[in-house]
Length: 484
Image 1 (tube, helix red, strand yellow):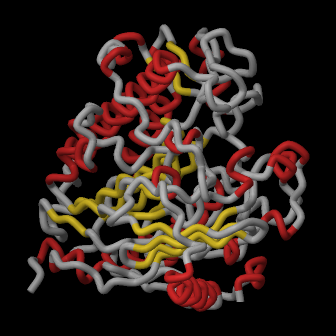
Image 2 (cartoon, helix red, strand yellow):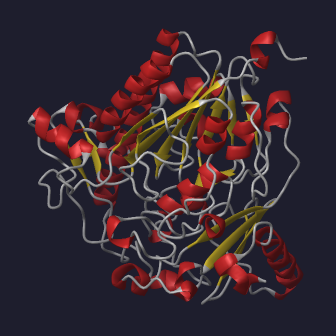
Image 3 (cartoon, rainbow, N blue to C red):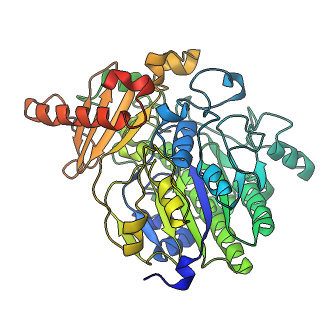
């Protein structure tokens, strides 16, 4: 039986980073990156060891996390931007119910700080009626964060052509150092989140805190960078992947680092900035958690720390995201609730990017809308047991295609060209315009050996294709009817 405290409706704080690798935290396996605050949160809660986004692209992933629907069901198939506002697939449909829509209707006060990136970013929407403190585009002089830089009298380091930013050629992550802590967008976001928390006290509340980092540009203060001496930074294990037996498009896909163009020293310098930025995110996470304690609501607040998608960071010869490799599609995910979840828990069963929304709704005692692509795992989390195994799906718009990315080609056959299924130890990637991929993650965790063409795996490929078709039809396959 639950304690009286656990029977109260908890507050919910969801911190969603952007482009954070699943293994870039101490609590998820890094013995190198310094993340004491998030690690402490993990010790007080549950770590989802195999959490997957529903799409390794920012806007589609965020829409799915918040709605429990796959991108083809939300309508968000590529990243939103003002110039794409009226184009199909570029924004979440207005009739999609987010977690905030449901919680607001059920008596919660819901607010959003940081990035939204799902359409009409400057306007409160989708149930976030109790507070809206977002920034949008670093090159818009009317953007709240850009105005903040101007009011503080500091340079906007995210502006186009900023002197603070360095990069090694067109297909590497931009990075640099900043001189003033007020130039850091995560600090601004957490400042706004704290202000919103002060106005939401008197629970129940739901606060979404959208942290843009460690998405490039990767800008850090020099003292944080000093924690990661370049000569000590570990190099990506698969940076020299020849892509033998992999789909042809990967050899010239977006974000491919041309072989031989980046030496080890340059790699390490770029990686040091990424890891230093993760440590900055951790420090700001500690500041936010400390404010919950000062408000006296830490014990009855479900805290979620996650990322919209991952970051390849040089693995397989790529940076950024978009591909279905583990570094891109697998994400860190920690849930803690002292009054309702056991401490020190781990879930090893794969969990999908559509599962967290219904899980949080059940923990909050709110109704779960139907139909959803996701499932709640709240019961197993409360009992400290593994959920029943279930396949996990991810999908992707073909911004890996240079034609789509560089020429704005948003034809349906490019908007929905790759689907991934993780089922047990097996991962299958169906590619609409190229050969498929099959990896056995227990034997080949770095995904170097594509087994899809091997005759002995033909029955498995067919079974996984059928499983993809079944998952896509829960809410209708939309642009993925080609998978039927």
